[in-house]
Image 1 (cartoon, rainbow, N blue to C red):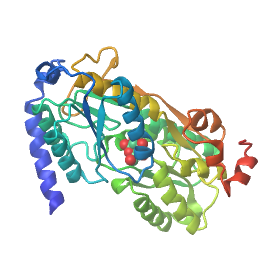
Image 2: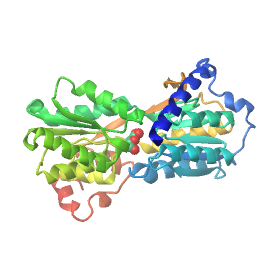
Image 3: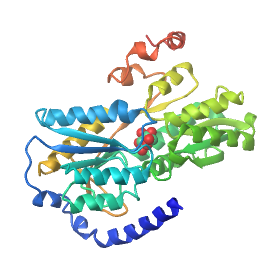
Image 4: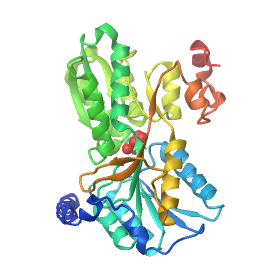
Length: 367
Ligand code: BGC
């Protein structure tokens, strides 16, 4: 019932948004700053992240954004944080609370990029600029930063093809995409298909509800029953969290040594790469993405131009010409763990090679 109500409200919102999108289309993306009082360093930044099952949000994004805001405001800026735990309705309430509490700017990583549009409009009406973080929220946002998400999907697809080599058509692969409410998931999927189509047989493909590892696990079990355990030769998994659920299902069915992709360079993912259970992940520099978001938010709160920060423009379904920065990504395999996650200080060698992982690290020469 609630879902149906949300869907209807979203459609109504999309229509009214289309009608008021013209100011943005004329290229004036800093209009909210004109009426906002010019702020000094004592700004309040509202940070909304979508979930906390995927490790990145509270291990990297949150502390890195807080650090950047402090740095840019001589320690005087404050970040107010809320995590929506995959609940779009809760996220809308969190935006309301932040508007009531008069934050100076919002950084929003949306659970549902369409459903959030009404909240973004409310923020605009309250003269609070919005930075869309990682996922391109619909509605009148002022800036956007993310990774090149189609390239993320291509990177995963290319790695899978490389791992399959000349056996790519000797069986079926399973594709486990992310949540259909996340525009990034659609871009990962598009990038992966652009590389894989025609080169592999896709036995089963899923959009995984809420990106949850347990849902990926259930989908994988269904795929194994449908395709047959001896015919599955690889799995495209859109992220590491789901790869965890998928690998558990593969092991339970007695399937070993097939390539599984991932994304996020989570510690558990990197450790599975070390043991060979997972073939690759996509390493994304959260420090870079978080730094850009912090710079955008502070500039917008202080009524400054984004010209020196964002050279590119992005379009969403509702808003055109959004100042944007897309950070490049790197394919992470057992061969470049040192040059990526260890070098950038995500994890130490000791963390990765702790306990039972020591022998596997030695075996791949990770010392
Ligand atoms: C992010 C990924 C993350 C996924 C699940 C995507 O929007 O870009 O890094 O794994 O959401 O939270």
